Every structure is written in structure tokens, then in C-alpha cells.
Amino acid sequence: AYLGVGATGPAKANVDRAIQADPSNPVFLMTAGFVAERAGDSERAIDFNRRALRSDPGAFAAANDLGVELARRHDYAAAESALRRAVGA
Image (cartoon, rainbow, N blue to C red; front, side):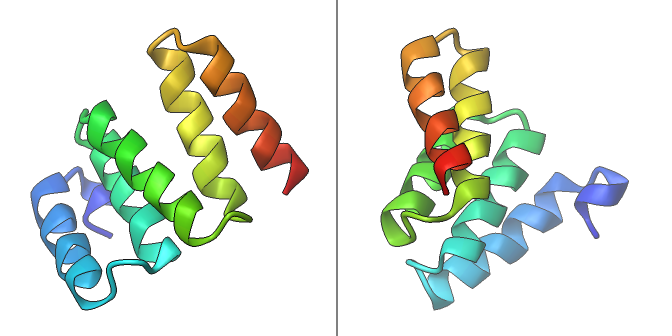
């Protein structure tokens, strides 16, 4: 809801608390990646999506978001790999 109104600060605070409660929960990690992306922190978004995939290798949304972030950085080989993983899931 916070992201819907552009309030990335409160969204980040909430997702940080969720991750503290369960650091390997792929849903929390994917959400943190989405919040980081919206806040303009590509590096953090990539990290959270990679962590989500380590926690749940079938997390196709995390693989998709990772691929998009990597493509934006012009890392096309890694982006292709992530996007193929998303499609394969």
C-alpha cells in the first residue's frame, strides 16, 4: 500500500521488519527487491532477488525481476539467464 502512494521509506521499514522476523522467506525477499527497485536502489534489488532465488529456486517472479534489473545495467548475459530461469519455472 505504501508503494502505491510513493512512500518507499515506510515500505522499506515494514519489509525490513519482515525480513528480520524470517530472513530466508522468499516472499519477504522478493517484496524487499520490489521496494528497493521502486526506491531506485538497483544494487539492493538485485541482491534481494538473488537471495530470494537461493531460498526458493522456483521463485519465477524473483528471477524475472532480477533479469529486468540486470538488463537495465546492460548485463545481458546474466539477464538472459535469469529470464530463462523465470520462464522455465
